[in-house]
Length: 143
Image 1 (cartoon, helix red, strand yellow):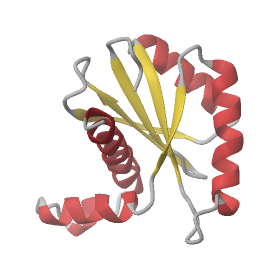
Image 2 (cartoon, one colour):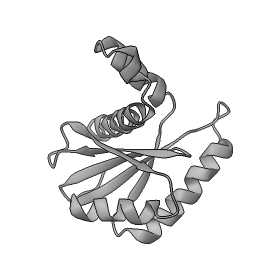
Image 3 (cartoon, helix red, strand yellow):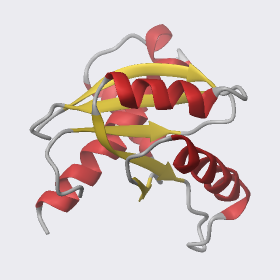
């Protein structure tokens, strides 16, 4: 985890939409920070959010294949990470995001969210970003 104190950003990268989450400055809790459409301007839009929110570290979810390798989607995420690193001045870390979308849907069910609301893809993408960021923070806090 970044040595300097401050807010972290979690990114759940998707082909159409990208879910965002932010930690509080003390890195205790996360909150959803919406979604962005995956357009050619995505990295610039994220760079603006990193600046505006005073983010000190970005965590991008990596969808590993069942064999542990990156797979086709992982390679796409890897290319995005390279572009993002060129656009922002804070470190970018990779975090295993396997099953975060499934976990996000389950969290909505357990929270009593109606099926119609659960099917709004943006909600799942944002929650997946929160879950991967929370997992990252818990893991690094326990080191």
